[in-house]
Image (tube, rainbow, N blue to C red; front, side, top):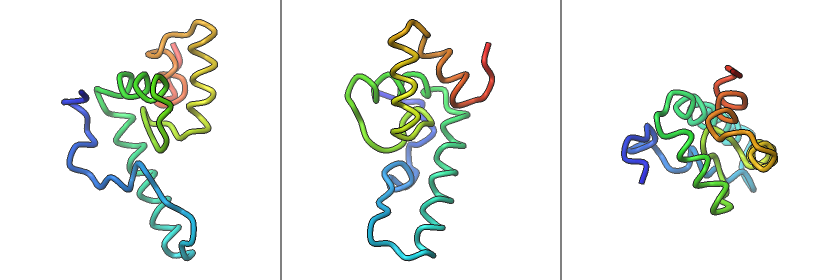
Length: 97
């Protein structure tokens, strides 16, 4: 699964950040890494597949270029008939069709 994903070989903690108990400096680094993760997702050919997997399996962390709060919105959009491709275009790449 996700053989062509751009996240392969990147630090796992970029997509699964742990913020509790961290210093301000550590939090700054965590958020910078999260931004890098999302930027990779925006270019990733597996982004839609990743989003679908995360929604079907109630994953935590960053999946399909979205954090948990944004994926909650994506779930509603899909539930009401929007395709996962269109959801990614609107919420991740910022290029609604």
